[in-house]
Length: 343
Image (cartoon, rainbow, N blue to C red; front, side, top):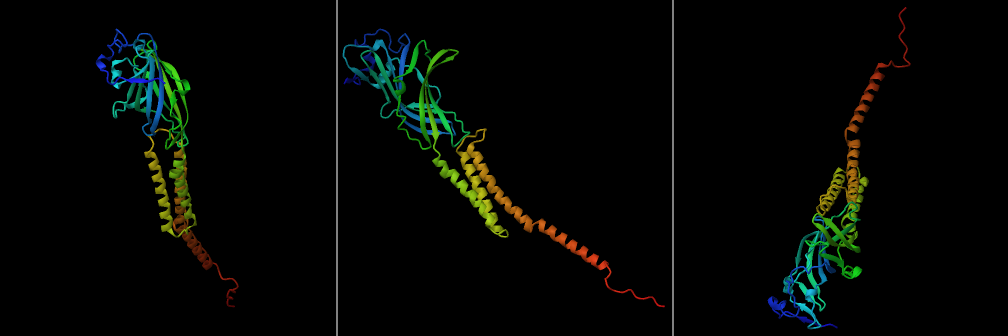
């Protein structure tokens, strides 16, 4: 077990001018040859996944490790855990999150960052970060959809000639994924990607952490599917109500139509304004058509029994009866003898 020495009591202004390291160049300058930077992420929580803003919020312990020979020492065979402010006196990678919208390093009770030195010059730099990262979602199958959200890590200024990124520990570089619990999603899988991207200013290293999220259907069964099914069935009750009970049938029809409209409105408020049709839109539109047709059915029944249809039938019957009466009056009575002419 290797012990650690805390350098909190060491003055930051004079610490790196001692004979411990014996360096002559400023330690804030890039070491020179390409530096291999290994990265680890321990995910504390995924706080929110927002379909409206197309992003997610992640809290993590972000660790970077590299070797700087200028910081190697043999005076003491122990690791040095330094005050977090010493990081301002060292060269650190200019790492940033490519797809983040807003990020910050926690600062309670002190700034949550760690610097640990090893005798061979290895530097371990840890940060506790909360970041809100963009995640473009395809909602065509919503709410039966699966989404892929990524966290892109890249060097801002150093090219591949100066720095190289790799996942420290390969597949075990990211931990804490299995213990994450989300209210609407389940993490099906995740994968780590290492690649290089080329811009006009050069080739840059990039690491990607990709989550595959599957939406849980339970919430939507209780909040959307079951109410819409019951309301659709309720609208069919009007078929068993007597056609002359207009107040009951109209009230039931209008109530079910307005309820379906409310469900549609509430759903639209929780989703972004996207140009394509979602699966749940087609389902709710089908329910709305059934409910609306049940209301139109009563209008048709009312027209047949009480509208112009019966009036026209009555007029046609009266006209036919009048015609028959006139015909009977104009026809001579059968069986009567014509009077004889006088002789």
